Image 1 (cartoon, rainbow, N blue to C red):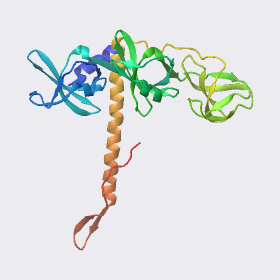
Image 2 (cartoon, helix red, strand yellow):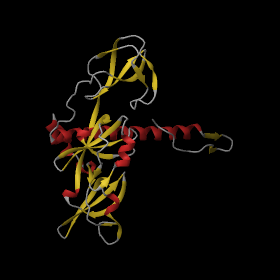
Image 3 (cartoon, helix red, strand yellow):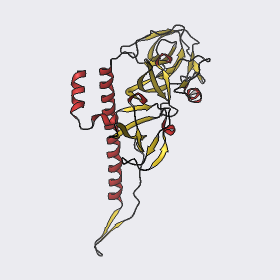
Image 4 (cartoon, helix red, strand yellow):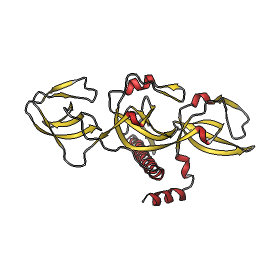
Length: 293
């Protein structure tokens, strides 16, 4: 199956243009406004450790130059080396928590991420990408809303597991119930010792989300939940996962874009009036974007 998907990707025009990378270069390089490399518009320090996409590339004097974009905004042309941009592999809906030691310093490629990690710890976060750096596996993680991203070692991440089969755990009465995974807001206590259904749990920890009286709560169980292998894929499999995730995200984007256009068209229809005597069409409203979920 993996080979079939890879073959499909190879048949697409510019299939690799949607690949994402993390830009690592630390030596100073110019950013140019166009492929003629005539005008310098910036320096590469502004995109160090940023997630980039290669939109186009050329060769000049046996050197490779690429047109980079960040967050769908084209930055400019820059000399590129394969070692300076690490391939990122998209991950589909992978959430979890960081398992941190207070003594750790979060520095990646000479940039500190201590502040970002402070924003991410003790909460459910999203693992967006997986990549290899110095022969170790890393993740790029963020808040669920994709703010405060940080590169961290895979070993510091614990995936949120959703059981494939019905799973129940025994809880004593007076077990504390919490509204969120940071365990700051208590929502009551278990009033009857019994077995309760597990909705999800943080891999290999005692942090469990259960269903209790038709509500979902977090609890700290007496025992750790089983540990399951989280990421163990060869590069071909990662390539397929990345490609499928890209297609899924693109499909969602275009569906939402179609909804926006349909909403605009409906507002146009609802605000058009026809004056039969004057034989004129009047538009009585404004066309504006609306939120599309």
